[in-house]
Length: 113
Length: 117
Image (cartoon, rainbow over all chains, first blue to last red; front, side, top):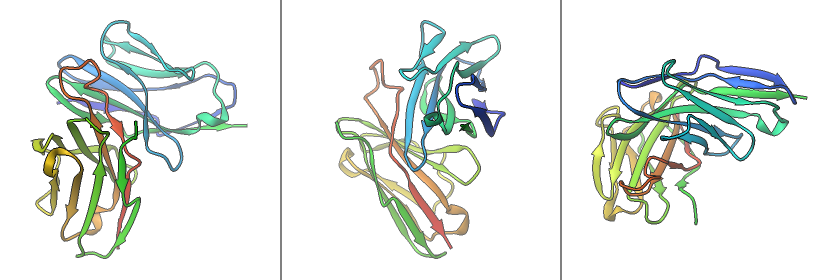
């Protein structure tokens, strides 16, 4: 069975500092990996995804994630965060013949001025 | 294109009452999913429709939950009778037909916050 672990429930960081949100998954078959973001009072928005090809994927707002098969990780990084990045971030896995997502418990990123 | 919409945005009901949640997927999306997030926990899969057929309902908690998607367009999720533990945020998502490169990408609605008192 697939599972996703987001060890950090909350991550406070100062504006313009770098951040890494960790995501580890378990699966015995090929996976597709996603990061979704939920801003306050809004729905889930796709931030970036890994389906195949390059293991480093990037979003339009400066986030990137790297698929590491040997470490079964898909950590999310940003070199310099903004106040507007304050949100909850969810890692999800899909694949192996099923389209449903398995989510992690989410990480609340709070960017401090 | 319009996104996934859900109605109502909030619902407060008493234990034992019935509530029906509605989801309108993106037009043309054959796949429709329901998920639920209980406070402080992960978002959990409930079920998956392909057009009007239930493809996977392995996440439905019990028979108090009934999902329908008549005509393969919008979907409803009825909880009857509601219990305290049903409180949470119910998300709906949709995706394109299988076989496309973006079939695995799900578009989520804003969610319905259900509170059972």
